[in-house]
Length: 206
Image (cartoon, rainbow, N blue to C red):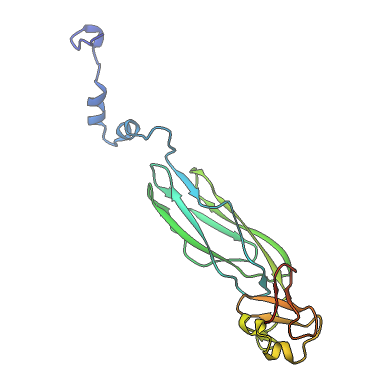
């Protein structure tokens, strides 16, 4: 049924578009243009958790990336962040993300105690929807000092290298400075395998 603006019953009626056009703070325009099915502030995080390779005590692992995305139609403000555990934030966090904007941050593991370590990165985004936490996991292992029995992965794998021909005995532990891990000799022979601290990786000199 058509609306007759001259009908006395319509006294005071303002067409919606006129109201929108006269709206000083544009709140009605924002409501009209609101994307269907989207939250105004919505932060998406690329991963729920990050697992780092075994890392020697007080040594730093390689960094891993976390990507933040504003999936909403309003600005997301990052008000505060907290990093727990033996982990390092290797890049700065943005203070805000505009709609559709992304930011990549880097995190590394630097254990100060042995064994499995857990921590996390928490982002306070106020009332924004979406994720705010990434779990961080790593294991601290004994690291041989770089100045004592420290070799590259190529040297450990070379049957003629001193690490395999001089003083090699079962149980001898050296530091693989290429892969940042301890390696233990399975026997005294030059071609005896080297095993990592977890017993999951072996290197047979050849």
